[in-house]
Image 1 (tube, rainbow, N blue to C red):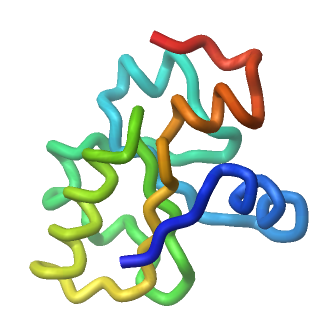
Image 2 (image 1 turned 90 degrees about the vertical axis):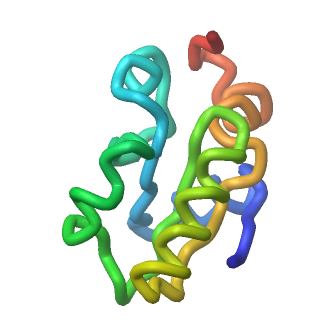
Length: 105
């Protein structure tokens, strides 16, 4: 599984449309989120796996990175996903380094 830091993610966002998967709970997603992110909570991943793109890279985030790593491991092991990228530091890092208007919780 690959990783990307938030500065590199932001640079990619400026040049192309990215698939960003936010695996936090819906209430967390409603507080703050990376622009363009789609929310599928970690607990719903197995039920909603067919909603995920298999061909293009999927950039996965959570609050700090732990849940994103767990979801990526599950998708790689159980569903043969290959093109997953964990956003290092998650939404917290994005809020601190890229968009300080995001409300941290």
